[in-house]
Length: 328
Image (cartoon, rainbow, N blue to C red; front, side, top):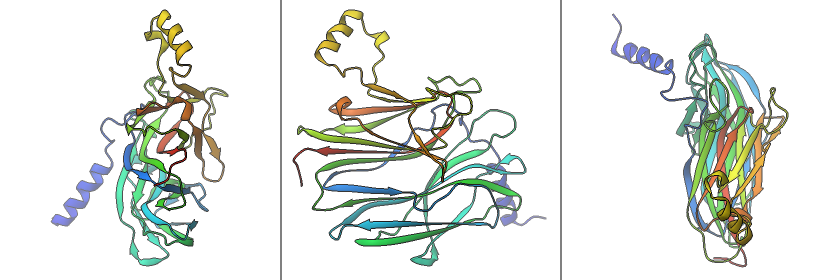
């Protein structure tokens, strides 16, 4: 007879082998806001010395170091460690991965996972494996030069494997020497792929940066996006994806109104860019940085990432709006 502990273990294994409800290649896993503040702020995002690693077996380790250099007067306001993974499976069946992470500054203490964002293509058949972003709490680095080294151990059952895109470190800090900025941090793991009956309209992940902007002039509005696998397609050479900022579908606007609006407000439609994300060959992660200042609205700015044959996992979005001539 199985012990109660054995039954619990078996139940958890069965749950892990069930496809996540509602998971598809459509934009059904919108990113969530994990940080928003206004002040003399700046941020550091780095993948350090991370590299792409396929088929990481049970018991194997992955190590990455992150050089961080904070100003002497910096005060850390928010820190995160992101683990980007994909194709987690056991014997060709989906399985949520099990990781143990240790920080070189205190290797005896495992890092606490604070969130997991997972998705899959949601199509019955083979290769419907999980992909996602794991989020860990990270001890705050001190002002000045830092080197943080993270060792990850794959602790899934025998025969399990998972693909590692890499690990990233994010630090948002306050410093008297910085100009006034509003910074939003969004995180998640939304698989987007316009295939298997999913149209580009469906394979779109929309996010809203909620809040009202200050009345002062905006000097810069930097949007930074992170998407493992983003920026590369075997099937298409152009317009494989797009980025929309406060985009307005003109087809829903009468022609006369379109003409008037275009004369009075040249950017009223917002903006759409194609073929975004620069693929980093070391990590196979796509990165995109855009100044979206001309297309901002005073409140609730909307950003949409659309797949059109790229296949990407949207994981992070950071918006940093700098107010001209202001400090706090």
